[in-house]
Length: 191
Image (cartoon, rainbow, N blue to C red; front, top):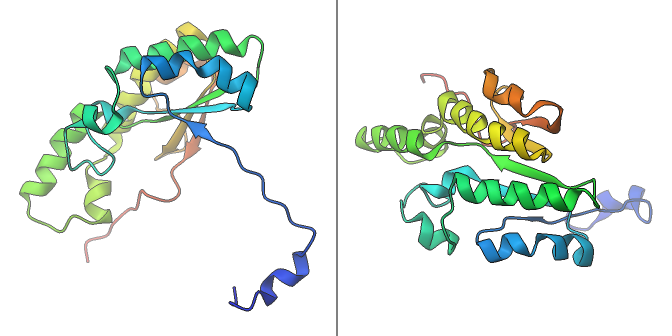
């Protein structure tokens, strides 16, 4: 787009941007705030980052608790979020929980291998530290409590665009949908 803004003229006055917030409850207190955020602020989407139970965002620290500034950020915490959303959803049916599905215990193995290899820590290394098993196990972990609570789940950035291939993903049933990974997973060639 040219800096002078000429590229915007054809849509001037006819284009609008919609936005929303996806909140990630990190503490039990924040989980309890979900109904008020929905009714008082119109929030309809919440997120949970499965890898935070073992890593920070860049996977360069295992001090996840310091990063989340939360309580136990684990599968139990995810279950509390799902329970609260399921109860709140009875009066607000459009609620959804989006999950970043990367299993941190497996990621640890692949991150350590990559770092020991001495290669540059770039997008390729990031991708190699998150092979399909890290996603498949995380989806299976999340599917059982999702099915039990009945919460709507959106599995984000999946390699194959489906919430796994195993029985775990089928447990989530119709309450699950998947979004293919279109921006941070890159297939590399040997150049």
